[in-house]
Image (cartoon, helix red, strand yellow):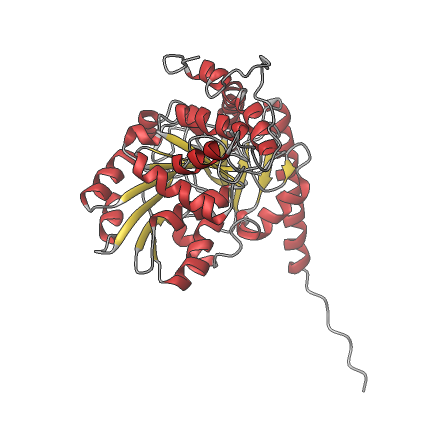
Length: 415
């Protein structure tokens, strides 16, 4: 079926699915490592075709291909490349588009391991990087160097929920001869299509919203241009970070409900974010659906919705953040995001603990920041859970303050 003319929810169900001889409604799991050739000439032809037809699952597989085609259509790209994890997608992008002596500009508050991979590993091979607030176009321009090859943007960013103007950043980067990569994980293709805004490459951790059920790890890359797509696929095949067929089957299953999951979760997120703004223990709420968010208007322009990711600052700092983690009951204390269950985590002691306190401040968040991924539970239950957790934090913090204020009289001196 040609699905290019269909709406996004119809594409979520039908894009990428080609009926086989059995008429299976779902794409079968082709759980095989290799594929038989009809004869020697057929085998030689497949190798000569370099990608057309199936040889070996690391190179290509029908189940994986169905997922790649589905996401590629959702992102309006020329093709997709599924990887074993989100970090596999990021590593593939770095491998394919950077070389020794090259320089990359990236979002300061980017996902921690994305930055760690560059600063701790790719730097050993002479790749340079600069991290700036990409919502400030002046900072992006100043960070560019003669050897800059890539501008890597995460928007909305993790965990600060900053929104970068993709169209403006792409114009700046292209004028400098740079490619633009956007990590679209927080928005998903349902809410944002960066290629339409000027980006060259988009990647996702499909572990998050695209799969949405906390039962599989995976990544995907899509590209606007065929030459770039071929560079990316070659890097993935050579590094061996391909997705497994069963992974692809699970992600395809999750993808079908992306729209209804996001619609439900972002409705609750708006209600929860508005409630959090009124709580005395919370000094700031970062949710792009709130008019108080500095890039609220930009988000309305380049996204079709505000999503379900919230981060908020606790007045009690690091200690309050850890205490809150110990007292939530409905929300699950775990890393990751974008699933049907609400997840909460404390970046300063968890996902971004590898960054120094100063680096976290430079990236725009304090040690009291909490990241909250709203699921599809009832909003009133999530709010009640947050309220009791905040109450517990307040009581425990007050108790510790009173305890430290009590002075213990010195022991009498015996003469």
